[in-house]
Image (cartoon, rainbow, N blue to C red; front, side, top):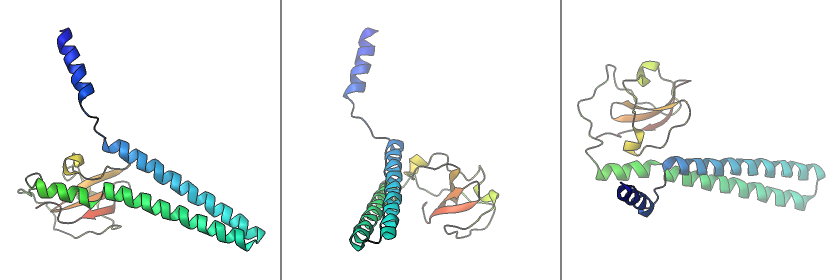
Length: 173
């Protein structure tokens, strides 16, 4: 028995650690929160410099605000790239059977939705929810959000308000 436990422990230690998407997501969320806080601080300092009226200070503070905003945009772009369209598209190209459409149809007509549209609860009922989004390499969900299948499209829905957050048209083959 000791041999099996020892072998299992050695195998667990020898295996490389796999980075979980939630850890990366949490880290990027912290980075984005920190960047937003930096923007607020730099903006506050800019307002103080404008009250004092020194042109050199104002110019420097504007430069700092611009830099903080640029850093925020870069982190947001990196996060979107990490969890964006490229990840699931490249996975879909190599695993076509996972994205096979099958004989699936909804009892309502197809409607092309766009981000920001409000939809009714029948569209994101339990029958249409994608219960395993990691299987398709979809970005992780936030609070009160669901990935929903609508014919060949996938919609990210805010379930509290019934709003479409993101649309991935032609997701399934």
